[in-house]
Image (cartoon, rainbow, N blue to C red; front, side, top):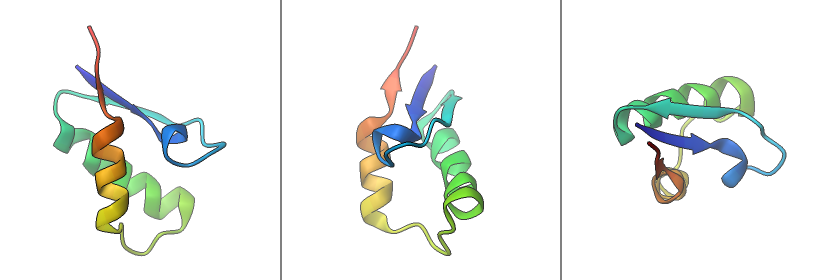
Length: 58
C-alpha cells in the first residue's frame, strides 16, 4: 500500500490518499487538485512533486 499527504506539497492541506499504486494515488490527487485547489490542469512539476512524496506503508 502507498500513501500521499497533500500537505507535503500544499501547505495547510490535510487531505491524504492511499492506493495500491502510484497511478491510483495520482488519479485521486488530480481530482482533488482540480476540485479543491482550483487547478484547471495539473502541471508536470506538481506531478513530479507528488510522485516524490508518495511513500510505501505496511
